[in-house]
Image (cartoon, rainbow, N blue to C red; front, side, top):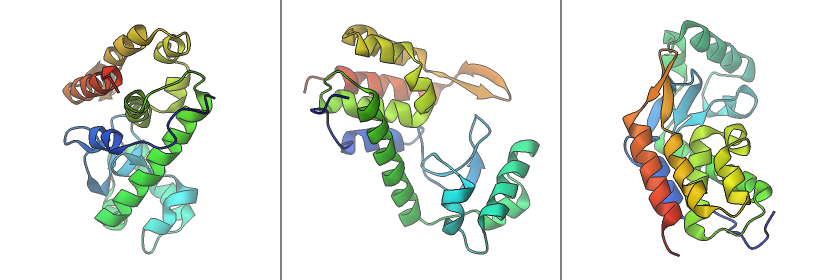
Length: 187
């Protein structure tokens, strides 16, 4: 871990994450392309930590709803009725998720990053997940000091699953372009 790296994501990271067409605001639960029950700005619902967001819902009910939606490949009627939040809750979840992503990034990064690079990587990791980033060529190139090579790797993360088939998604193409531009920006 490089202790001089930024400790928090700046508004630039939040801008990319929340930009319309990326992780836009959904106040009702939905299944993301990876078939995970999601709400707010791309927050994946977890029974043990998120049940309190919903009235008349406990951890076991949320777990059952998540499983049922994933098995059926759609948000079931009961989930549509129960799993909704307000904009303030969505913002709180986003702030929590971005802070956790920033903490992860700091913990696995041994090279010095400027704020732009840090924000771009937070946005990327927020979208692709920590495990994907940890094993990525982008991370390997970054750790090797190959900033140009790391920047070029953003362009490889543009596919998502649609009906079980990996394909290039226009929203991911524009998001990765924005992340790469921020990563390459001069601080």
